[in-house]
Amino acid sequence: MNHLTKNLTLESLEHWLRQDNAAELEKLWAAADAVRREHVGDAVHLRGLIEISNYCVRQCAYCGLAVTNPYLERYRMTDEEILECARQAHQFGYGTVVMQAGEDYGLETDRIARLVQAIKAELPLAVTLSLGERNPQELALWRTAGADRYLLRFETSDPELYAMIHPPRPGQTYSRFDLLRILRQLGYEVGSGVMIGIPGQTYRTLAHDILKFEQFDLDMIGVGPYIPNPLTPLGRGEEPLCIDPEQQVPNSELMAYKVIALTRLVCPQANIPSTTALATINRDNGRELGLSRGANVVMPNVTPVKYRTRYEIYPGKACLNETAQACQGCLKGRIRALGRFVGQGPGGRVR
Image (cartoon, rainbow, N blue to C red; front, side, top):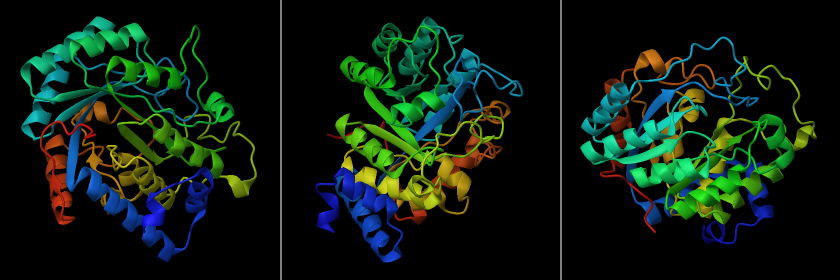
């Protein structure tokens, strides 16, 4: 097992990404689970997700929130609705709330700062923001207001593929990698991640992505399978990057587990969620398998159902119509069934 946990090179990562032998993969799962237990323990930390707006100015080719989608009924939650969700997350015993939205400049900078201050003043919660590519001045203001963490997935380290799926917005100055560095300088815990199996993604590119996680010494790393949305250009099969089919990474459940496991080996201290996308493609035990193969975080949704059904990055999300109350009860039972326990407090990275 030790040879799996040390000196993972680009070539060895690609080897494991291509590995389909069940016996060999059992070794990978065991190694990732052992490293997880050694470095972050048996606690599973729950982060209450609040999807505060589904407006977005971007035209990302895979995302149902893109400004070009005319079929989506848009919303922005009120301050009181957001605060009530945070209170509910605290009542459920969650140590963190995650305020997530599209890149929505209708969410004014000062308003977000006031919301962060209000949550921190009333509740003993860590606050994570996931609001897209905002400028350094905004990020600094939110950090000063008390925001603890920021999530900004870079999705792929391949510049050609990135340009295809993420058209730049006018006047854009900073790349996502620039912003990840700035977030670190501002003192945030920094989260990022990638999609797995985007059309045009090669095994070598995905191996590069995993090494990027190590290079940036990320505190949080979210990886999940690409799920097509038929209302998007990629979902309709438009303009994929043409590559050798033998090089194309599948957007499969198995590949997601491989990436979670390899990410744990490369970044042993990071907080790694078992994502909703995994639960969507395997509703029986996708989250549990993610947790047994390196993950240590789950992000239950505390957004009101009337909004949750409209935050449709991809269709058919798991737990879409379940109340927050039902969701937290289900998750806690599933975690106990694994022989794990729900973590207490904010659950930041332990260095």
